[in-house]
Amino acid sequence: MSKKKAMSSEKAKKVRQAGHDDAKEFARLIGLNHDYQNDPKAKKDVIDQNGDAHSVKSGKSKWQIFLYSPSRFENDVIFKRLNGLGELFLECLNVFPDEYEEYLKNKDFYKNKLKPKMVALKEKLQNPDTLEAFFDKSFFNAGEVQYLTIKANDEFHVFHRDDVLKVLKNHIKVENSKKRSKGQFDAQKVVFKVRKPPKNNYVSIGEIEMRNDSKTHYKEMKFWMGKELTFNLLKNHITPVKNAKPGLKIYGKAIKKFKKY
Image 1 (cartoon, rainbow, N blue to C red):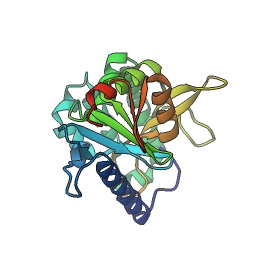
Image 2: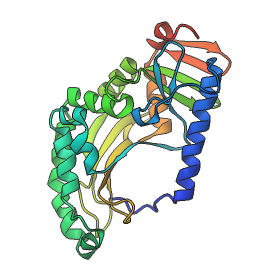
Image 3: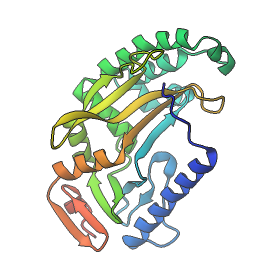
């Protein structure tokens, strides 16, 4: 559980608004009207003129892919079918008492209880097919979304779901976190790592972690990915690339599928 300062509600609101603005910009770029279709709850930020959905990611450093309470894993049918992942997420969350005040009385006790659950989650995600299914659910709502569209350097970069999943599956290593100082505990997170040029040393590209930092954010499971590392990983491994128009680049399988643009 990270000790980083939680984002204020005002800042979080600004981040969400910036994301909405970027989605609108992308919609206009591909010729949609101001009343374009979307469904953010299903990760369909923009539905293009072909009827395909785009998850549009921008941000400066990190993307929050999901932040879910126990009810999401209890009720989401797809999570229940992901090789036991839904059950493991629930087990991690249910380590903690219902009342935030009760958790504060004995944090170390609950962190120790979390360790074997996070180890089991890591081991489950070390299976390449399970890892791919997890990314598919998290990024694309298990196939409901066809594209990951990233705004970087004032351009939109369109990647097809199949290419994205292949790269993430083949290049990401799954580990547990290690304590870095006295008072911390091992295995409080699942850490996704990739090789970073030029040294090719493994660095963290994303994490699954608990949020227990306040009454507002208590007993929640968070999954985030780093923007720069993820974007570089995809563009370095997905070819060819087509400059469709100023401000729009299309990669790999998306070139044929997204051919209107």
